[in-house]
Amino acid sequence: LTTALVPTMGAFHRGHLSLMKWARDNSRRVIVSLFVNPTQFGPGEDLAAYPRAFERDARLAEEHGADALFAPRPEDMYSEDHATWVEVPKLTRALCARSRPGHFRGVATIVTKLLILACPNIAVFGEKDWQQLAVIRRLVVDLNLPVKIVGRPTVREDDGLAMSSRNAYLSEDERKQAPNIYAGLRELNKWRKAGEKSAQTLVQRLEEHYRRTMPSGEIDYIQIVHPRTLEPLSTVVGPALAAAAVRFGKARLIDNLLLEA
Ligand code: PAF
Image 1 (tube, rainbow, N blue to C red):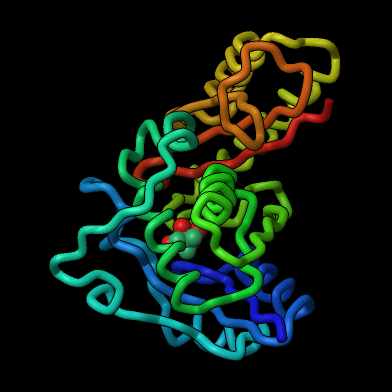
Image 2 (cartoon, rainbow, N blue to C red):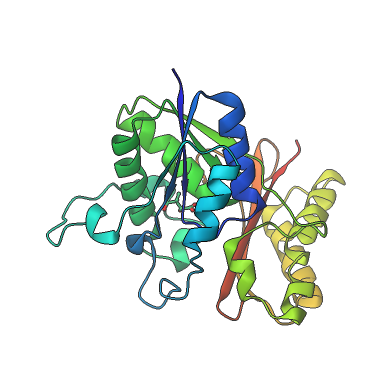
């Protein structure tokens, strides 16, 4: 009997639902967890504002094939004297880790706890959070957790914007600009295919592109890294991932694209 776990923080959009559908189609039993994990939010971040819609989420999970919804309270997951953390330092130096110190420690710890509690054979995550997925793949191997980690493609709006619960924070004007995050990554891939190999040049061109197309956006980072080790690359010749994070007000949006060799 296969059990699949779909870990989430709720506020479901089509991205979450596609993970549930994949789990439903590929396992006998589907558990969806819904927990807005406080330890992965930094002091100035949006823990309090993070969208919560429990009744709607519970209904959607059921409609999309969940057999069980696991929605613990913070005190169920973290006792007052909680003192154990899971960390994967090698993969949490670049990309999102720079502006979100402690974030991946929170993610790695809660995912480990969820895997221990739910005992799934498979756990399903979206590729939009590529670094998170890389961290989880690593910790599962390193801690000998008997679970297969499955990454599923990012689900997008018609104009290319990656689905995210944080898109709800965008104003109308910001929402119009935000699809340029992904459009720009695709441009970078074209420059790369046309022969540009220098990561620095590619990143600089994308920075200019972002400034032009997203005047309200503030670039947090643009990086080209090895897709598995997440080591920054200086020359783009083999497997590579271009990843970006852009802030629009309190919405910090991330996206990535695997560059074709
Ligand atoms: O991707 C998310 O929604 C969260 O980071 C996760 C994996 C559910 C851990 O809280």
